[in-house]
Image (cartoon, rainbow, N blue to C red; front, side, top):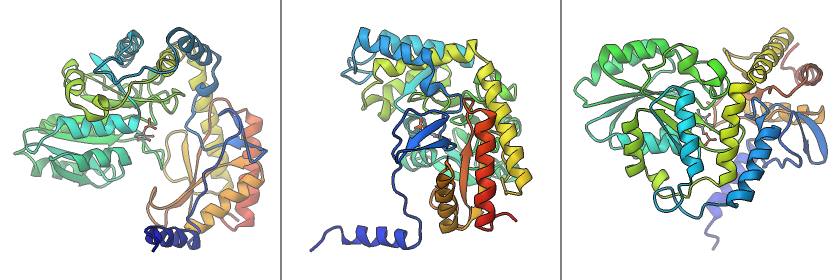
Length: 392
Ligand SMILES: *Cc1c(COP(=O)(O)O)cnc(C)c1O
């Protein structure tokens, strides 16, 4: 008897539906162009917005940290794995984000799970946008708090949820700052107003806004001039920051509480010195080289305009995350494969990452790409789009 027969069957059904993806091996560094299966392609699928994965200052900081402190830390933060580097970086992050304190988690995913699952109890209610990231959803699954899911960026529905949960001890409204599959920005000013009206607190997950929006990439709170009015900011160090990790920025009491109780923080080893040193240097780069962010936005505008001009449906993106919405899962995967043949790597994204019938090739240009790279990519989109009948 094959104990995994049911898994094999399910996998076969994905293959039959054209929804099965192989892992793509990158054989080079994560740059403007990458090498895949021995072929060079323009990289339009990474979250390396600012090109910091390969920035000379980050490489140098990481190497120096390895030489000085070694490859790993050998312990969780709460036992023997807090190095002075970790504390120095968290102070720097808090200062950067204009918050009292910051705490780093192993990833953005664990930061979300850690916060949502830890600070709420049965007397509380979490109110969450329906398109929030999977890690917020998993955090919600782990709490005993009541839950209300509101329609995507629908402020009337949010207000209704706030009206119906007034007996709760604490209401936590959670939203992505930038929605990762569509590139739209959450209506944070309205969310904050509603939160203030109904005495709720707000948590924003700025994974796709860290290093992208706000002054020097401080995120959506700074972008909307809401400093001091959003209680909890989650950021990632794995996307524009170019390294690995997640963080929570907020009041001191939150940091203190999470250190005592957040399970991903307590039960998983701290970041290696190279990671923390490179992240710290990345914040210095954000402060000292703002022109990188300008290049990112310039490239994003150029590429978006190009796609629209060709007649592609790019949804309602307001950030460098630009979906090319195709709809059918199998056609989307075919589109993505054909782009690769033309020297462009743009991964197709289908159910369950996005809703059925909303499959897309999601593109994210980076600051490292040249206008020639982007022109070449647009020419590939045009050729493939016409061949497959996506545009006319
Ligand atoms: C990517 C992402 C995360 C997870 O961040 P990692 O650091 O990669 O774990 C969390 N939230 C959102 C909205 C994301 O896009």
